[in-house]
Length: 560
Image (spheres, one colour):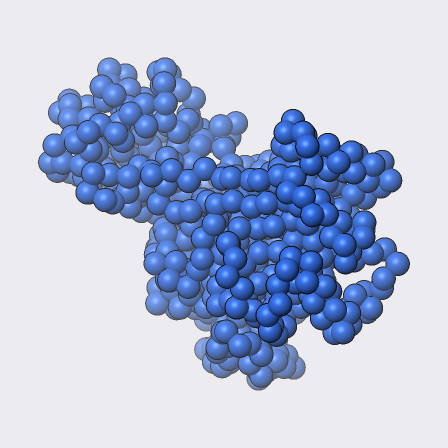
């Protein structure tokens, strides 16, 4: 019988709520087959559940624990992740607790050897990086999921899984015993130690590094800039690397490399950890009281499944891939998995697309993970050289970077960036020449509007057709074409981006662009149409004078 920890995690800055086990009707009588069951209520699972609910599919979401994650864990959200969080409807709640940053520094002993400045322009609604402890993220997402009617079942552990034909049977264990549940589709979002992945006997491919890091959160009233700091060979940790950055509520995180001759047990010894925190604070000239909050041991990996689509079982987040934290890739990649899968799985469940569209989820996201593995491996080899040869290279770069600008870009963290699906079979290649704007497969470009709002405020989880310009013929053609798709039951929204701000007939939203700023940034001067997928990536675009093709594009992506 499953007996999860029901004692709230200790914390000075977050009040943990223990979610009770609520006996489901399935324990007393079969309730039929559920369309989607998601296993694991971390950020990837919660974002997937919310996106499905927003698109008309209410999933069952099971979680083995009784509360959200202990400690800060994943703390840094990229701008793209915040755009996804906004589409989930909780960006204000995140920002109400978070802190933001756009720069970081790397030190070699006592010298600054690299200053990273991430672009943050007036058209960006969100900062390049937003720091918020994972416990806060999950709490906000849990509240949102429950408000949308997601069937969220805490204290429920997956014990067995059988795929037969067009259904999956799950055996679930709870504090009141086991029960069976049937689903059309199962998604594993249950993290690095995924039970779903284990039950299917799947193995990762890629690199697993020998280096280890202790991650220690501690509370201190330290008035320092928010950005991340990387310390190569601090005096208290010869030959190793440490990182430090701030999270909300005066909680700072110190990640430091564990020497090869120190065991895991020794590395997690309380006095050893405390002495390292004291030594680091002394090194940076800080003499303030502090208290430790949370500690864990971490080993960087660059691993992925070969496919995220295994019949009736799919994978998102750390269940699908394990990526180094250097460059804030792990959770941020997971939420991009979730928003990609959500619209495709919803279309299949609602019989608007064939199950073959799920193959494009796997191909698009595996390609992203493989590219990240390549980039992250470069960062990891610089932060924690795995061999003597890489160690010699690191020392050479660091020594040169003290006095020579040309060497400093080699220390770039290669931070997470939005993926481009240009090579996807779902992407319609340009027939017209565009001088600017997000290209086919790219995520959208936000624009600050004259009224203080932003272009992406008008976007919802649907196919969004943006018609730039005041030309009536262009609008009418796009509207009539979109109506053809709507008549097939597809959710298509028409957004007019016009200088006069007038709402034309059939528009779901209008964006006033009196200066033409949005048109210029999207390369749409003279009139143009963009079709965005429900995950906001550009599906197709064309200019005034070209044949409209909204319905044709939707058929191209596999919608019936």
